[in-house]
Length: 330
Ligand code: ATR
Image 1 (cartoon, helix red, strand yellow):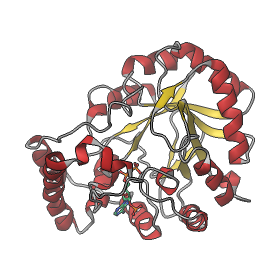
Image 2 (tube, rainbow, N blue to C red):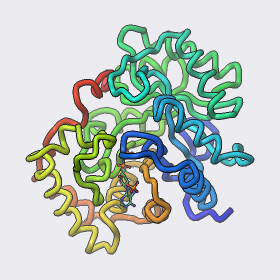
Image 3 (spheres, rainbow, N blue to C red):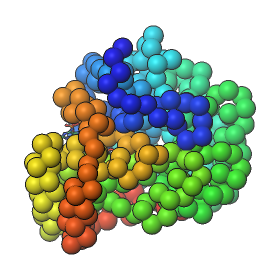
Image 4 (cartoon, helix red, strand yellow):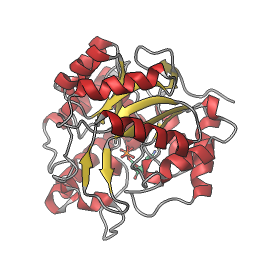
């Protein structure tokens, strides 16, 4: 295997992960028609062959399909991969409406179901996908820590939790990763979470670092299978305003000799050594470009030029619908 990408430690664990991971969600659902299993497997194996070992999935992506695809792709190569999966968003197949569960008995069942679909006897990083406001976080983490003791889980993570919840969780069991949406156009984690994760030795894992394709060449369409077409920031005037920010940022990418997607990843990585983004892609050429982005270093002048554009711009529209905001920042 060639190592074309540098490695980092996952939080305070001993697990080694590549400086950029692969978000697998879009291979199964949410971003248009699913990719064929054959192409999905090819992409995931190509990632492994090129040093990317950090694979992000969840039980709810394609209602189990995404985890099964990962299992299929990693046949005979399980030990080379660091599998991150998540539980807690409960929904019916094909429906977006969801409820959130962090009840201990649900945690245990969800873990066993994921292990079965992933065809493995351990999950490297097990995340709470969204925080259940009806169950004390201590109870959810308590059950996860028993899964660690039993050898079924190696490290614990939380997605989209508030700083207060993260502190409480970390007091029960060491948290290795906090995953939230973060990009040049979604900077909420800068308020508290980036600093807190750094202070506690927790990896910060940005999802949607390319703003779901807005910081590349994705554009809204009539496609109902692409959930971005429902998101407030991709509607009408909001999309037009946000796209014009992206266009301004493109000029900086042009000067740097990289793509806007690469600039977006380099910018996210420049915000802290403990940051490991997981861009999602369905295409080998984009994966290669994302791997190359891990080596792009932005100088102070470039960072200030980006900052100047962002300070003068207002990103319009929420990042989710109200349904999607359930369990976010709690
Ligand atoms: P998420 O984490 O939710 O998957 P993201 O990583 O911010 O979101 O963006 C994913 C989108 O960016 C996808 O539409 C992906 O399109 P492809 O599947 O066609 O690749 C796009 N994308 C990812 N990497 C890209 C790259 N290097 N160049 C252009 N588009 C890219």
